[in-house]
Length: 347
Image 1: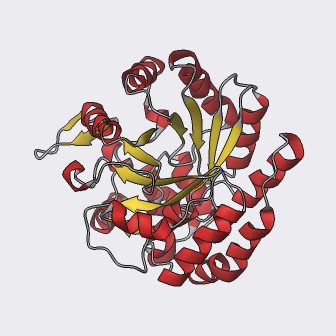
Image 2 (image 1 turned 30 degrees about the vertical axis):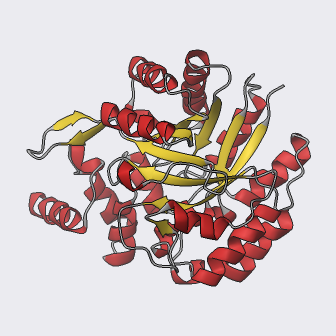
């Protein structure tokens, strides 16, 4: 019988809000409390090729991850994430052992820009990196960014390609929170029909349109005959409008799926740490994030135009409507300012 499992990504996706600077003592305490809650997978942060700081959940060595994990909780798995566009080189990654993270999740991209600015395929590069992860002895979760950019044929081809690596899980990822339950279930069924029976089907969503919880509930009710893994974070802390709320989906699963998650440690993490981060830098549903989802734009545009430049919602919509093709996916403050100036000149 299939199992529905929870992955907590508070310390990883939540780091987009505070540059992963949770503080050394907070990181240790949050890790312990979230493990006590009974989540099935605890994601501790990013693996990246950059200097290590104890106060951040960004690591450049599995030794640093081991030190944080300490003695593993028997029923939990521990994960970290890599991104192919800014990876930890494989020669810097120690082989897996009993004390290391069990799982490495890899964000793979459909396309990228080469040195001449041309759009080129990026999936093979992602495949080769993922193969290196497997060869190091880690369990692999494949996270293809922005599922909405794939046609059905492209998505099936991608699923079949990465299935050859026998990953622990393949994900449907709504990176910008643009998709409703019907749209995402369509991709979930395509994945379900084209990957090995033993592979877990994952879901990672964002709340730009306040749909992450309803999508997760729809996925649960769909009755897939394979294990399901759902990502969530305390109070939804995460990039853009944030993630599925861990405390909400845990409560739902306790009531409807026979799960036995302890919500109290999740609430303690909120009280002791997350609410203070929220007081400094807010996330969650807002009209600017709704607008970036409506116009299929990188959510960083919402944060920049609303929080940094103070544009009202009408002004933000005017700018987003003027953004061209690839600019929707790309974001930098320089580009955002150029787009704004271009839009003003054209009006």
